[in-house]
Image (cartoon, rainbow, N blue to C red; front, side, top):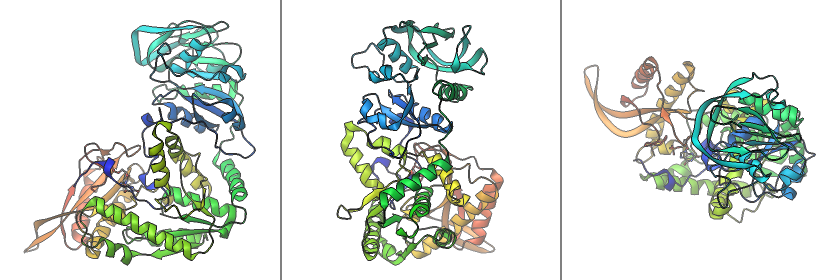
Length: 556
Ligand code: XMP
């Protein structure tokens, strides 16, 4: 039943959120930036710290750390011109690490404006080496690669970067090259056993550090970053959910005017936050379309309606297309076929609903910052196109509507914070990801109402016990699968021949990799006991102990 993930055509409601992530890991960022940061938030600007990406697997993490410090930042490519970033009101520049060596041909270097604009600059690892190289110092291959923990010792006065920090501190290193000669005007501020020059600085707020303050293995790294932001750059802590909501509400009003907006709601966090945010801005000019494809979990449709229609008073166009979807799926066993059919049907139903609403000018969608970064991959324009397309759920070309994408500059955890700020219920904001094709890819073989009913009951019990035992938030996903196998059992004096249900629970950070969760045996025992007692036709429960890879999270 397993297949190569890459071959899956992921079909979604109008948002890509149910992948649960920006779809790619940290290491995808490296080459993913290309043609400038020209398109950006355009309101009266708060300050921005620019993070130049030299291809480190940690670049995105640097951006996260800055945002967590309540300072807005954007990742930009090393080729970005000043014209494409000036409107961001830059307050400082951070240059990331990267896999290159500065003395290689074609090594990426910072644009000249970084050194001419008078802003503070913090070079991290390769970023520091690039700065040294470009300003006339020397970098050479180190006789010994330094990887892992090191003790950083400050020289007499290591300056603003280390305010409030001990003179000796543990840091995380990962480099082969090192600085051997400083550029004019710079002095060495700290060293480790293997790096005689591990921190440098000049009088213009240009600083370089050989270690990685962004990773958790540098315990005081956050303070180093914050010293740079608050003391060296003079940034204030204005990047908060409250400010974001106020600013975005303003921006949406400006963009939409008195136009009408539709938003495909899936019940997941991204589309829910988009809907709540836009509703706050323009009220009834927004209509949400919620398609029940008949493949949702027990009470899911009711819960979404309850939250949006009754509590938030958002206009909701609820379409029960169960018959439609189940009819189209009748007899279909192949997983890829199921996905294709569900995606196609979704577009058809959504389009029909949208056209019933009359003139609609805008389509709201939950594109997140990681999607934006990935779409900027110039070397793969084709894949960028596919992803953009995928983000609107593959809506046809002729449905020409302007996009409203208020979450375009947010990471997933920031979306959650904004959701809480907007008053969305915690169950919704911290909901585990649920795939667009729903229960169809958790029922092996063809889909019938009876099988859906069996799976829904079993799944409800899994969720109930997972929640009751306080495991819901720590698990990436937890659910039941109808395996398609039957087994012999015994109940009372009778032989049974019933369904086999598998329990799947995984821990993961981004769904790219996952480990099967070590759920306490007593919880598994309770789930097994309840399902075999409460769900007719099921006589055996197994626990899936496959990690990803080689397995996938879903069974199909
Ligand atoms: P896999 O099974 O590939 O899943 O390890 C990774 C994550 O993606 C979700 N998933 C999907 N989400 N449409 C979606 O919206 C899909 O077709 C789809 N397939 C998998 C899955 O639930 C997990 O979070």
